[in-house]
Image (tube, rainbow, N blue to C red; front, side):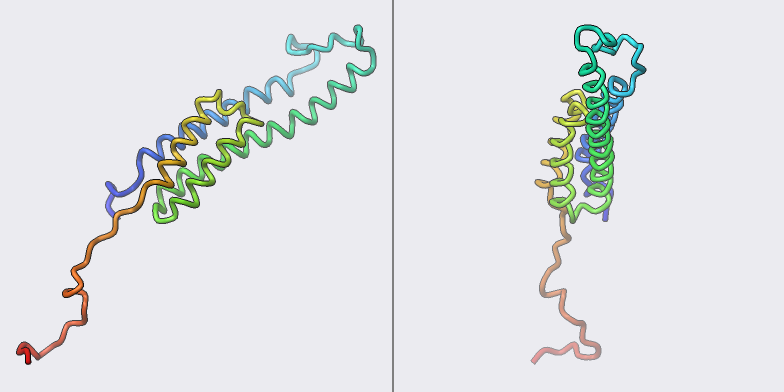
Length: 154
C-alpha cells in the first residue's frame, strides 16, 4: 500500500480529538480528587449542610471516579482507533464507528475534550467511515493464467 492511500486527515483529527479528551478527563479528575481543604471544596465542612454535606462529598467522589475512568478510557480508545484506522484502512467502518461512539461517550467523563475534542473525534470517525481504500484496477484479460509455449490462437 502506498503512503498516499492512507487516511492521514482521519489520523490527525482522531489523534487531536483523543488527546483533548484525555486532557479534559485529567482536568475533570483534578476537581474530583482535589484535597478537601482546597479552593475546589464547595461543602464548607459541616456548615449549613451538616452530615449530609460530608456524605454527598464522598458520593460525588465515587461518581467522579467513574466518570474520570470513562473519560480516560474514551480518550485512549479514540487514539487507538485512529491509529488502527491509519494502519488498516480496509477496516475503516469499524474503527470509524468506534471513534464516533467513544468521542460521544467522552461527554460524560472527559467534558468532550473541552467540546473541541468531541468535534474533532466525530469528524475523524466520519471521515474514516466515508473513506474507501483505493484498489488497484486489474485488466480482466491480463488476469488469467499465462500459457507457456502456445503463441498461436485457433
